Image (tube, rainbow, N blue to C red; front, side, top):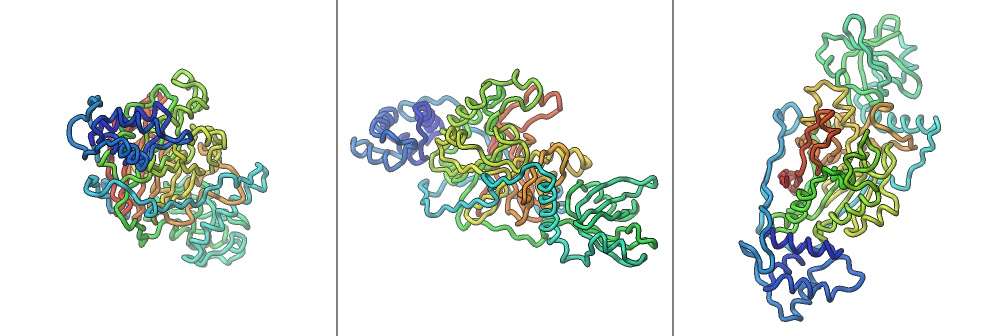
Length: 522
């Protein structure tokens, strides 16, 4: 079935308020007169129907003595070609796999030899870590204490088995010259007059200073540290026991022996983010090409769509944003997004988390959308969960996080370790710290809760972010990290801060192999 025929049918159904399963679109496009077949199907749909399903199309066409034929090259009757098929792009791969502890993902092309119909019983989708409706924070001092205690306890547990740790107050009472170890939060990082580094660790009992000598082989790790992350240090106490000289440093990290899970069948997931409907720079043509492509045989194995935040452009997000808005009302923006969502095949499972442009609180973790916004975006019945959340698709766990903290990682770390041009490498540092937003009080707003929902308690198989509008993917200790670009061309604000977005890309992951293909629609 040509893309043009599919696109025309999908566009017509969307304009009338309907979504459709891919197989339904295939049957309509295969009819002798697709337009007449579509009209007959719409006339016979139940009044409360939102999705045109394949069984209804087959029944209607059979009752009307319509005949079907397989899709072929060229245009179908009633539908004239109005564009070219999108091209494929391989995206960016890791240039030095040995430096990241894992090889680059193998890029593949989708096959077209499997049956298009999917047995829903084969699908499996589970959500973990969704804190929507679970927020307990009141902003009291005790809330902040609780969240940091939880962070230290849970991430510290991953480190205490590796060292002979002591509380800060116990270390202060130990005799000088002995070996000592501690697990704590990074409270302060500063350089000395001699060029050494002084790291202050804090635990539930107090603080203790650790000196990292500039000529030691691990001194460059200090450049990777962020305040409030959990760390373990081993070293030797000074004679007066007032400071310890660091001999080794440990992060919670992803085990190098991590073996990711994979699906038992060939099935794919599209990972995208930052749609930004409502912006004058929203690339509606690219989005429509993407949605139409999802109806084709090339995309027949794409059964899941994961959107990592910023469905809409929002209002009042940055200075003079109103001058760049195509839709100025936030609710109208979501209404428009819902219309674009209708173009996605009705048999694709969708999971969405909010981002910093969405109409939710800015502080992370961000609960999923309220009931009014969920009602607006109900056409496709998506799973709407908090930012971050972990979604497990047929055994493959995917940590979805919008990615605001990547700005902080890139700003704090040297350019060779984290940059906007290679956003996946900035994600590696979050994996190493086992926390999606470790630093408090900086660019990233963090909400105090009884539990730290931003911890990576379990190792994900895939780490999916957006926010920075740059495309990049690679593997860190066998965890596939993907930053999925955006669907918004460069805005005046982005020009002012030298951001050149990667727009109109859709990374497609084979869940049975964790190989990646990047489709380009811009």
